[in-house]
Image (tube, rainbow, N blue to C red; front, side, top):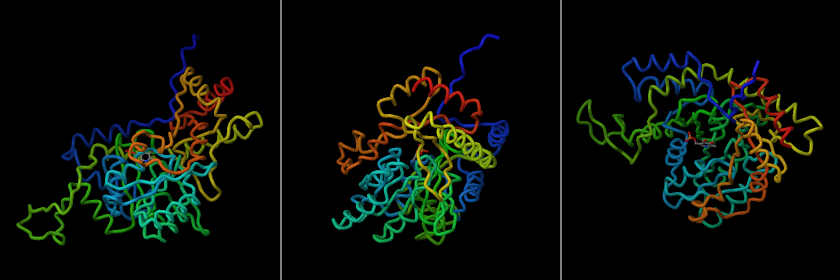
Length: 394
Ligand SMILES: Cc1ncc(COP(=O)(O)O)c(C=O)c1O
């Protein structure tokens, strides 16, 4: 048998099955295309997965960050703090509201926000009369940030914690003997999720905010739809059953019923997807524990007491080898990725004076990190394929 070229192996990929397709087709035959009852069904699924009482599904994770910042009271001149290693959206949510995001360094071994640096930053901002309105810890790669520690820092200055859980649906962390779920809203007042195709479950584009706070929930619901309400308790007057009022400047950040039909179908298989991600991560872990990799490959550390949901499987390799490894793997149809370029280095952040601070760990991390393929449709043989290609390249 003639062997053809191996199929492309991306770092992440959606898994869409026949029942997902059938769910979308069924939705297309129904009465609702844009926001209708399928949105609420999807929100209930997300509440069940996270344990948070309320959920507001929106157009994407970035919109979720924007609305969460607005609901937390970020406005022109307000400050917020997030990690330097994240997708730019974590900081942009604050900027969209006219606020000023401040970036802090990450821990060298986990790439999660450094609690020491965060405490220093919040202290310095408070002393300068610019105490932050929001702290946005990022559950990078799927491992929860130290949320109880972040909350303790936030409470000192009255800041709201917005957990960026775009990577961590299904992750857990244990604090003082109790285990909590990512995006459960226990330590962070709000959490945001993303359903981009590489995430744990997909709606194409999509996002959500979870919270246990009813007032924040109601505010987010209004902001999602133009700041418009029909709630008789909130109206200044009431001309009749058609009547609505715009109370505040909101947005059209609605997600559609078509997307949510897909999301609900995906949510039902979420436990299987999560378990497969964890199995694959264990296979990589076991392989990289062998002596042959010791000096060359160091997986990101998942701190004791935390269970990663493994959105990403990141390893650090010698910085001098990283680019060559990336290119050599690509020649073998293995498409790794670099997550992320430190936010403080982005031209738009520098030009707006938002790149201040010292980021030695983020810089060293960026120079050596590479995200290996990891997605629920991967076979065991694909892990072997990645390892064999890495052996050749390194
Ligand atoms: C950490 C993080 N936050 C927020 C987002 C934004 O999500 P979305 O792409 O759904 O807007 C992403 C997207 O990749 C992300 O990785």
